[in-house]
Image (cartoon, rainbow, N blue to C red):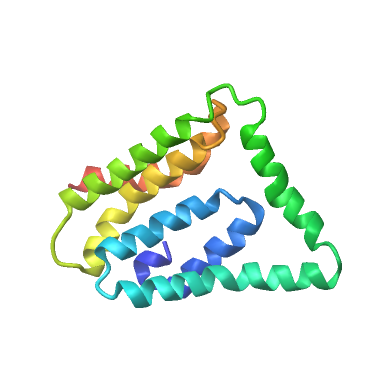
Length: 168
């Protein structure tokens, strides 16, 4: 929501802090970046600010964890274990990632097609809920495990999208 108020550095910082605890947040950050790329009037500057904000807490945490000698443990727990989990005992074949990625790409393409036109902050704000929903659902289904609580991360995006559709 910081992004829709043109607080891109803060939005990136919030995503970066969230990423330290839940790595799949990076997928939702990508939705924000894609929205900026496609619809924001000053996309290059906006994306640079968002990425700088994202990197700041990650870099700060990396420095602190390295200084106290636990960076390798953090990387294993945060990433090594997670990616092993994604591939281990999945009930849906891992190859479906290609289908899921294609659906996100199709959603991005459809959003761009329906909302194409001159870049504006208004257009970015209008399209972010749709992009966020597509990426959040991708993130929720990333592990190929059909656990309903994984879909909770899509609730805020779906709520905003429903409100946008309801107002249209």
